[in-house]
Image (cartoon, rainbow, N blue to C red; front, side, top):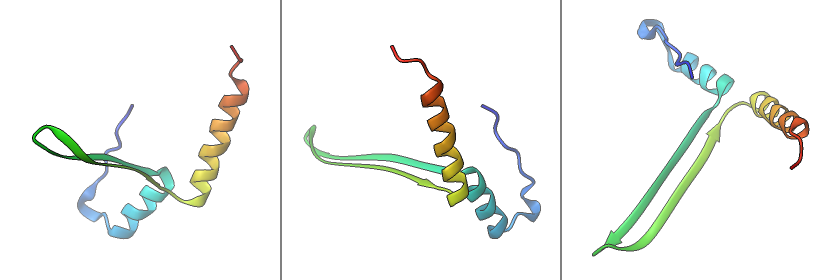
Length: 72
């Protein structure tokens, strides 16, 4: 996967938000609270931030891949 290289000298918050909404951002994290090696609380987070247009394009692409994949 290729990483994007941005010139951050003139990058504003509006530019950053525009790029994030255009490409999409995935947040994923886990937190486990335990005492004496006994897990007490588990918190999982999965969130995606993108524009409506980007989400629809991703959904259409995933649907096309599902249709084109032969059943086993």
